[in-house]
Image 1: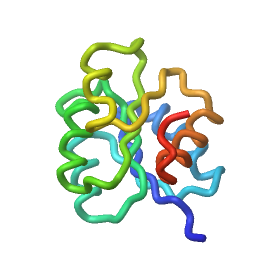
Image 2: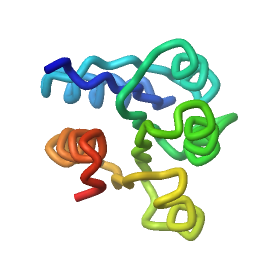
Image 3: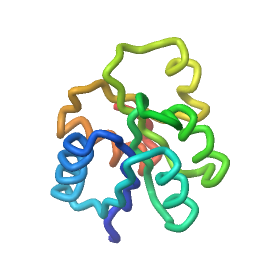
Image 4: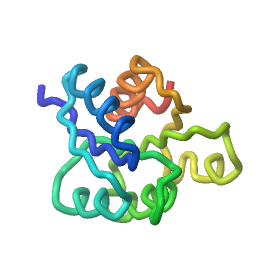
Amino acid sequence: MDPLRVLLVEDDDDNRELMAEVLAASGCEVLSASSGQDGLKQLSEHSVDVVVTDIGMPGMGGLELARAAKRIAPRVPVVVVTGWAERDDIAAARGRDVDAVLIKPVDPDALTRTVSDVAQGRGPP
């Protein structure tokens, strides 16, 4: 079976590097982007199985990215990562543009399990 291809969009270099390492160690192929705009560009150029994006980014935030990603690739699940507790805008996007939500600091096992689950259509744990 081919490895899952994950597009990881995170503006914080340290968080992006750490999450990319965790995903790669679990056998995923990781494409990284440091902004929502770069993430959309990569999504339009590459086939991916899952998008993982931070919510709080300058410019295009993660929820805006999730909406745009669903227009480009409607079947690709989107996992958002946030440092905030469940907010109304996140709750409203869930099930429409957002397939799963992870709270920072992200547990490595939860990250890999959630990516695997949404890629297989099982939804969030």
